[in-house]
Image 1 (cartoon, rainbow, N blue to C red):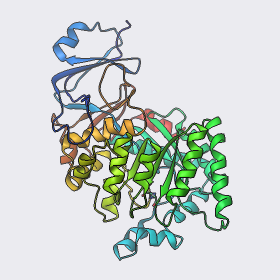
Image 2 (image 1 turned 30 degrees about the vertical axis):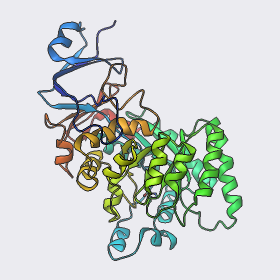
Image 3 (image 1 turned 180 degrees about the vertical axis):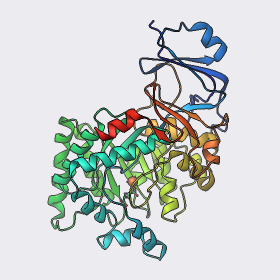
Image 4 (image 1 turned 30 degrees about the horizontal axis):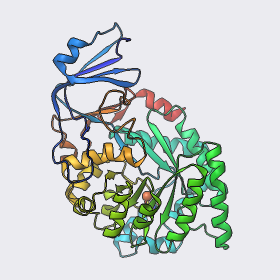
Length: 427
Ligand code: NIG
Ligand code: FE
């Protein structure tokens, strides 16, 4: 066996390796108090107590030794739902909602998502690539080492394909793992009249998307007044036939049969669920569909978050995401999402951390390679500013992340990305 690249010791390891991650079964996380972690070739080779690990490991001349000084060491966070590929902020819309206009009302009037579609079309690919990379780097500084990014600010076949190509460029030499989702059915494209023709054209793109390896999954905004459960079923059937994973924005603001559909189709996950029914959540649980919680969106839209109690009751596996986007959740911070999950949705701290790691990895079908600290998995981990991992939920609105490692390499420290990550943004 070759010498390790990195050995982290005197850490309080929180492996998040609990076998059962359905909500309500885990109140406390197992920890290794004086723990160590050995990294070789970008993977975790061994974990255990510092004394034992150091006794069993032969260091090489190039092995880096890192004294964690008792800090908590947790898995790199997995953000399984973002809309990070766009141009332009929507600050005035925030105040419009404050003054009583509804999110869907603004969208119906040609604002909201449509405003971002116009802004995104107005900039060149290079600008869009750089801005998206900057956002992903900002997320990494908060501990995110795997991030899902959706299209969805194109809406027409040509513009959506452009966004997929830009996303390929964004991913080139990325320091974190980027999972790609096609969200062509995010809103109705303004000026397009023929519903049937448009839906057929969008379905028709999917086999090409798969063949050219431009996306991993397909998502739909299944919501009353946006895309119906029938539109969604049909598009997701086309996605599945093409060999792509399927998921949906389900019952975000109004009950729309989204959770039921996710259960029926055996989607990878269903996201938002603020207006989901208990039957829908049970249908998801019965078919191993992960519930992706987006408490930042609920917070920002002044809605009630999906409660942990209802998820426990249904027996569904929970994940946690930022939903980063310019309209309903402009945050990049998964620690903030964990704080909201605890304080606004009733997750225990253990459940919130499991949701943002193992649960979120499962929401992307990536549970075999990330989401916990275990031998053989990618060496994605985060050192926190405290020995107690609950600093994540305690320091709300701040960044309690000390250092972030992806594939065994340092990518951010004390809220700042490394020069290597900056070079990726600029390349
Ligand atoms: O997840 N609901 C649809 N999509 C996003 C918001 C997109 C936007 O407002 O730009 C969401 O909330
Ligand atoms: Fe979303």
